[in-house]
Image 1 (cartoon, one colour):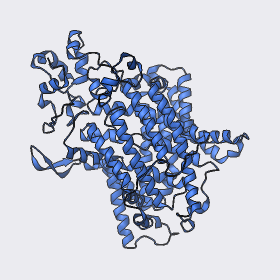
Image 2: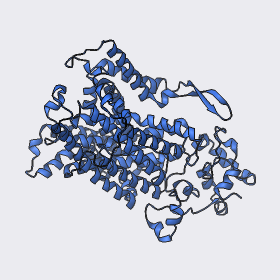
Image 3: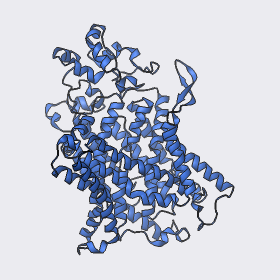
Image 4: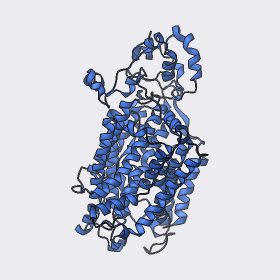
Amino acid sequence: MPSTPREKRAAMDAGGRDNPTFQVEDANHYHIMSVYDTKHTGEMQSIKESNADNDRNKLAYAVTDVPPWYLCILLGIQHYLTALGGLVAIPLILSKDLCLTHDPLTQSHLISTIFFVSGICTLLQVLFGVRLPILQGGTFTFLTPTLAMLSLPKWRCPEWTQNATMVNATSPEFVELWQSRIREVQGAVMVASCFQIFVGFSGLIGFLMRFIGPLTIAPTITLIGLPLFESAGRDAGTHWGISAMTTFFIVLFSQYLRNVPLPVPSYSRAKKCHISKVYLFQIFPVLLGISISWLICFILTFTNALPSKPDSYGYFARTDVKGDVLSQAPWFRFPYPGQWGLPTISFAGVFGILAGVISSMIESVGDYHACARLSGAPPPPKHAINRGIGIEGIGCLLAGAWGTGNGTTSYSENVGALGITRVGSRAVIVSGGILMLLMGVFSKIGAVFATIPTPVIGGMFLVMFGVIAAVGISNLQFADMNSSRNIFIVGFSIFAGLTIPNWVNKNTELLQTGIVQLDQVILVLLTTGMFVGGFFGFFLDNTIPGTKEERGINAWNKVNGEESDECPDVSDVYDLPFGIGTKICSPPWIRYIPFCPKPAKQNFAVAQENGHLEKYAENHL
């Protein structure tokens, strides 16, 4: 009877894979999709048939498989491109409030820095964190509190920084102006990340999740996207025709053409050179939409169809507005901690970013379970989730030290890409992480993205921010929305999250207590819509009487999975690498540490002996 991974692999039926040409000769293998031994075929066949539609049966590569090196590189590039829209968008959104509207060269440095740090954090997460194929990158949950902090009277940009003719990007006065602001953001992110590190490695995330359900998550995430309508409208309004065209292309590719395959030359050992059908529109809708609109803007600029006067409507649709940045940017630039100076800390910024940290942690827990489901892995056990959240906290600490102006989190877009490509190998994500590191050092790449015309960015924002708001609302599917209790909580929380920040921004003098530090904390928290809405959602959901079924807690917990330490092969996926899990974590007392792996409690033989065969097959077929 097979008991070791090698024996299981040898006994595995090759026909169980959707694509048998994707066979690999690797000793570390967890791709159990078929009956192990003909001796057990009869007693397990009915269980196998009941799980025939399991996602793992459709995978070309499961989580512990290692594809050929060339496939790792190509698929790693794909994941990098999938995350590209979000990675580039964050520095561009922050640039106005950092007083960098007319300094594209510094914008390109910020883009390169976020690439570089995202690569480091991805490698840490895949190798030592949750150990699933999940990409790390900048997070929109930090944007709202960051913008609220930068809107304080002390940090508002002077009017002259919005006038291109008055900005000298190399002057010491201007450099200190924007660097003092990003140093404030750095300090807030670094301190707030310590809370996430503590919550993760102490195991408190499981305790917190008991009180947080769909009625807290929905208004919190929805209010990440909704308050950004002004930023999207401002950029799109520089040329509504170009921004509408960008939106049209993204919607066309992502919604109408997503199921239309395109013939692409490919190679495999079995078929050699051949034509494969690839759903490019489904994988790269944002990238394709931006690229086509960008090309059209270039043609209109080359033919002088767009106005050439800076004060004319449509001028910012020209591709030569920021053209100097490509020639000014060095070919190679190595980002380093403290590159903008020593971070500064204020209580106001820390409390604001904490709201983003909590939202990011909750979202990441859901991403871990979705990623495990799509990559052919068992649901993540508690120790893996604890490590994942803790490593994300370390990632935010590194992002603050390097000065991205943001933190890091798991990218839901790339989790979705696993289901599209049917490749769940974490070796692919390692390749993507290394690629992001290289792109961060190759600074011409960041300079190219900094030259994207403003209305093209605005068109992307219209789609992206709308999707973020809709993702928040989609969490309500788990709650009973026929309940007047739930309707009240959601409606009041979202409306309060829009109304209170708007009033506070217009009446800051009425909230002055005479203590400057306290005034700043109050202003940042009350002008952060996701904090206001999330607080009311959390408070009302946990105080107004309601059953767990009505609140959506039961359905929420079911989707997010249950404790999976009973899974006999959980160690194949979630144990620490390089022998750390088996050697350093082997003493019995270390197993009580929340982030240390625990031994598998049963193998195939034990499952059969104890009558747990059905549960065992559930986790493996």
